[in-house]
Amino acid sequence: MNNNYSIGIRLRELRRSKGLSQEQLALRADITTAYLGQVERNEKNPTVVIMEKLCNALEISLSDFFSNQPLKQNETDVVTGQILYELKNTTELEKIEILHIIQHALKLKSIK
Image (cartoon, rainbow, N blue to C red):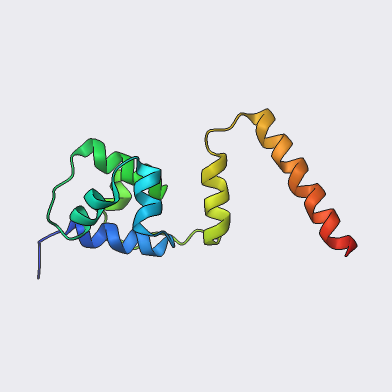
Protein backbone atom coordinates (compact mmCIF):
# COMPACT_ATOMS: atom_id res chain seq x y z
CA MET A 1 0.00 0.00 0.00
CA ASN A 2 1.41 3.36 -1.05
CA ASN A 3 0.77 6.06 1.55
CA ASN A 4 2.43 8.84 -0.42
CA TYR A 5 0.00 11.48 -1.56
CA SER A 6 0.96 13.42 -4.67
CA ILE A 7 -0.54 16.89 -4.78
CA GLY A 8 0.78 17.33 -8.32
CA ILE A 9 -0.80 14.16 -9.70
CA ARG A 10 -4.12 14.90 -7.99
CA LEU A 11 -4.09 18.48 -9.26
CA ARG A 12 -3.40 17.39 -12.85
CA GLU A 13 -6.11 14.73 -12.62
CA LEU A 14 -8.70 17.22 -11.35
CA ARG A 15 -7.69 19.91 -13.86
CA ARG A 16 -8.05 17.48 -16.75
CA SER A 17 -11.37 16.14 -15.43
CA LYS A 18 -12.68 19.71 -15.54
CA GLY A 19 -11.43 20.10 -19.12
CA LEU A 20 -9.07 22.93 -18.24
CA SER A 21 -5.64 23.67 -19.63
CA GLN A 22 -2.84 24.71 -17.31
CA GLU A 23 -3.22 28.25 -18.61
CA GLN A 24 -6.95 28.34 -17.86
CA LEU A 25 -6.53 27.00 -14.33
CA ALA A 26 -3.59 29.30 -13.58
CA LEU A 27 -5.59 32.30 -14.77
CA ARG A 28 -8.59 31.33 -12.64
CA ALA A 29 -6.36 30.76 -9.59
CA ASP A 30 -4.36 33.96 -10.16
CA ILE A 31 -1.02 32.13 -10.28
CA THR A 32 1.51 31.74 -13.08
CA THR A 33 1.33 28.87 -15.53
CA ALA A 34 4.98 28.10 -14.81
CA TYR A 35 4.28 27.73 -11.09
CA LEU A 36 1.24 25.53 -11.76
CA GLY A 37 3.40 23.30 -13.97
CA GLN A 38 5.98 23.02 -11.20
CA VAL A 39 3.30 22.04 -8.70
CA GLU A 40 1.88 19.42 -11.08
CA ARG A 41 5.36 17.97 -11.57
CA ASN A 42 5.86 17.94 -7.77
CA GLU A 43 8.78 20.35 -8.08
CA LYS A 44 7.09 22.92 -5.82
CA ASN A 45 4.96 22.46 -2.72
CA PRO A 46 2.10 24.97 -2.71
CA THR A 47 1.06 26.82 0.41
CA VAL A 48 -2.40 26.42 1.87
CA VAL A 49 -3.32 29.80 0.39
CA ILE A 50 -2.33 28.61 -3.10
CA MET A 51 -4.19 25.34 -2.58
CA GLU A 52 -7.29 27.30 -1.60
CA LYS A 53 -6.99 29.39 -4.78
CA LEU A 54 -6.59 26.25 -6.89
CA CYS A 55 -9.54 24.51 -5.24
CA ASN A 56 -11.72 27.60 -5.70
CA ALA A 57 -10.71 27.71 -9.37
CA LEU A 58 -11.58 24.01 -9.71
CA GLU A 59 -14.83 24.65 -7.80
CA ILE A 60 -14.08 22.00 -5.17
CA SER A 61 -13.37 22.07 -1.45
CA LEU A 62 -9.98 21.45 0.09
CA SER A 63 -11.38 18.30 1.69
CA ASP A 64 -12.51 17.05 -1.74
CA PHE A 65 -9.03 17.71 -3.08
CA PHE A 66 -7.35 15.63 -0.39
CA SER A 67 -9.98 12.89 -0.43
CA ASN A 68 -9.06 9.58 -2.02
CA GLN A 69 -12.59 9.35 -3.34
CA PRO A 70 -13.30 10.33 -6.95
CA LEU A 71 -15.22 13.55 -7.29
CA LYS A 72 -18.91 13.32 -7.91
CA GLN A 73 -19.41 14.09 -11.54
CA ASN A 74 -21.22 17.32 -12.02
CA GLU A 75 -24.04 17.11 -14.50
CA THR A 76 -22.81 20.19 -16.33
CA ASP A 77 -20.47 19.93 -19.26
CA VAL A 78 -17.17 21.80 -19.48
CA VAL A 79 -18.54 24.80 -21.38
CA THR A 80 -21.46 25.20 -18.99
CA GLY A 81 -19.02 25.03 -16.10
CA GLN A 82 -16.93 27.78 -17.67
CA ILE A 83 -20.04 29.94 -18.14
CA LEU A 84 -20.99 29.43 -14.49
CA TYR A 85 -17.46 30.33 -13.42
CA GLU A 86 -17.62 33.58 -15.40
CA LEU A 87 -20.93 34.44 -13.71
CA LYS A 88 -19.55 33.76 -10.24
CA ASN A 89 -18.75 37.39 -9.37
CA THR A 90 -21.70 39.07 -11.05
CA THR A 91 -24.63 40.66 -9.30
CA GLU A 92 -28.13 39.22 -9.43
CA LEU A 93 -29.19 42.04 -11.76
CA GLU A 94 -26.28 41.33 -14.11
CA LYS A 95 -27.20 37.64 -14.14
CA ILE A 96 -30.79 38.50 -15.08
CA GLU A 97 -29.58 40.75 -17.90
CA ILE A 98 -27.27 38.00 -19.20
CA LEU A 99 -30.14 35.50 -18.99
CA HIS A 100 -32.28 37.81 -21.16
CA ILE A 101 -29.47 38.08 -23.71
CA ILE A 102 -29.14 34.28 -23.84
CA GLN A 103 -32.89 33.84 -24.20
CA HIS A 104 -32.97 36.39 -27.02
CA ALA A 105 -30.04 34.68 -28.78
CA LEU A 106 -31.80 31.31 -28.55
CA LYS A 107 -34.99 32.80 -30.00
CA LEU A 108 -32.99 34.19 -32.92
CA LYS A 109 -31.40 30.78 -33.44
CA SER A 110 -34.81 29.09 -33.63
CA ILE A 111 -35.98 31.58 -36.29
CA LYS A 112 -33.33 30.41 -38.76
